[in-house]
Length: 91
Figure 1: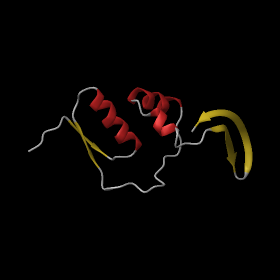
Figure 2: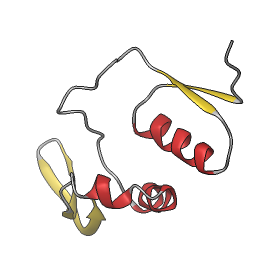
Figure 3: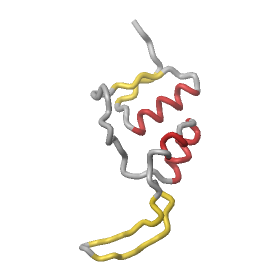
Figure 4: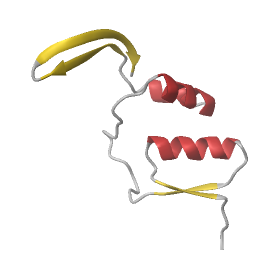
């Protein structure tokens, strides 16, 4: 029987990042996810400042950012009308 310190449910971005960070800290973790393989178009909505900081701490930021597109502006729209447009460094 295998023993582990932490069980993480969900192998998406948050779960995978948590597992990587725990592993680097010497804490055993297991990922539990219904998907054996994620589809090739697996994606998240956006990555911003805090998320990028976490990815850098895990050492996977370069690999993740290589598969993203930098969004230089963020638009806010309601009912088909543009309300605001700001510079952005989100991916």
